Image (cartoon, rainbow, N blue to C red):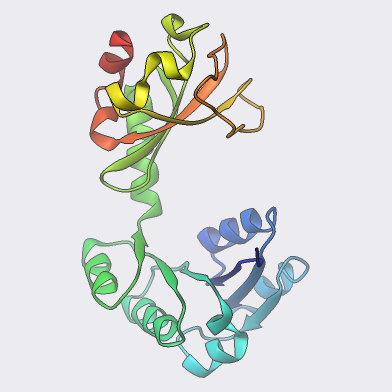
Length: 223
């Protein structure tokens, strides 16, 4: 399988966090930012870094953005800049363009011109934090979109010693177990077969409908 190529337009706080995380994985990273010091700082981990204005179509083309599988427009400060960046990426044939926004109006505009995904990091982090505060049985909640969430939680005592096939969580509760950690700081293990037996103290990760998260304590009490 070919290494994916990811483009990051803008190396502010959000863009830098994306580049830092991507550097831990097997992928090529192309970054464009109008601050030379930002590009120079990440020179060692970038496949290609370009100093310039990412609203310039020719500059994006020269940077190799047309070779990217995914591009993140990582700054949402100016609507015009975001619009031009999304349009240019799509005109260059980028399959998936993700754009950061700060307002509902910007979201609507970028979706209409072809952005494949529009995110509001501050809002989405706030939503996840609020739900985590309210749902004491969970250790983390990530809302992927309005309908789907990932939830991390400790298994109820009644699950211990039982297998995934015995509990039939997917069929009965729309709870899809996708991995587990033996301890909080352990790596995520995604090899979960039907005969997997739940153990004391492990952390489970599951995908479920977002509406079920709001009643997770009630759901857990019935399992």
